[in-house]
Image: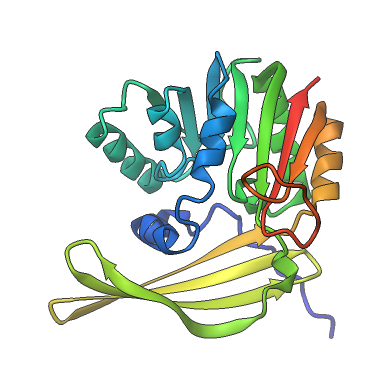
Length: 262
């Protein structure tokens, strides 16, 4: 009997539940190693910057703090709520605008932005090829001629080893609560998908809670993404292998593509 194919989970699912843990986890993994790169990219821009998948404001806030006019868009209301609170606390709410929306159909005017930033694998959360094509077409509509697009890809997803229930992080979160991340990784190599099943166990004052959700990313190689960008109306300006502008190769820890709208 032929095994029935199961449709992949939408890449945006899971991020609402992830909102409570996103900043805590990234402080221990990604940290701020890419922030200065996006600040430098935005610094010479006279017009408005757009960040795709702005989440809790990890990139958006420091870019706004550097003086850029920035709009952040995300599909997750809980993520955006955290970003808005951070903007208000930092007195930056007048320097950045947050919008809830779908990056496959951006709700902005034609040529509204001089720079579009797609940090840390946001375009890989589009799990179907047609969704990525739609997003790139929408980006091409809202970026000005001669404007720039920066795309940061999570490298080498197919080489992630599959494992189940591995304790990957632990520490304190919020007001003294202990939190542990138990993670499982699954691969759907036919669809080029990597699925991260997250189980966060939080303990506070003898009370134990569990939060479970999954995040899905699709493998997109640098040559493939470059070809898709060119098809959407961009010229590849540079391909970087680190956040200091070093050259790229497929073994690099960082895969960044910079493109210009033609």
